[in-house]
Amino acid sequence: MKTAHRRDATSVQLFAGLSETESSALLARATQRVARAGTVLFRQGEPASALFLLRNGRVKFVRSNAEGQEAVLRWLSPGDCFGIGSLVAAPWCYFGTAQAVGEVRVYRWDASTIRAAAVRHPELARNALGIILRTFKEFSDRHIALLSASAERRQAQAAGVRPGR
Image (cartoon, rainbow, N blue to C red; front, side, top):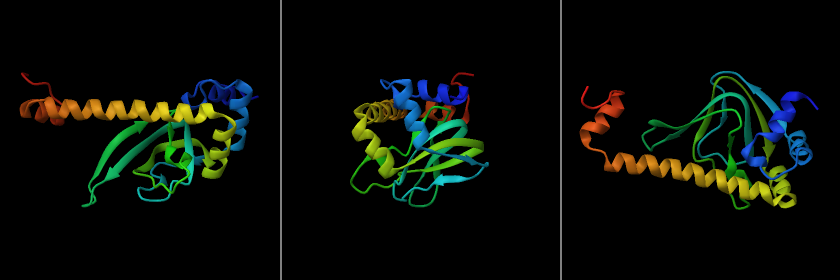
């Protein structure tokens, strides 16, 4: 097995609790894609048709409001999974847009492949839920910080300076 492939099989949150052999078999079922800077991997509102695992590079995950203004929700790094809505059997849409920031390499599983894998390996669904819960906690912590900070502090944070300086 290639060294990079072995590292991917053993260091990814989605694969926690799986053996290296099981993880490698899952990676082998994925298609690998290289995307140039600016490439959109999926768009907000599209059906969640695939799960992605970022192998290298960075991905910007943004959400647009009704007026079309974008907010960056997250910067994704190697080892991060996105498109987890593809694990849901009921129709689900991506709630944001994933865009490559520089060249990226991703593993991509179509929804039917990753759902079948989750039936064979329930750890995948449990790990995906853990990823979702950690992300929800991160977003709720940010939300609480925004709600509880003074207007001066929020303005300073938006400007990138510390209050009192």
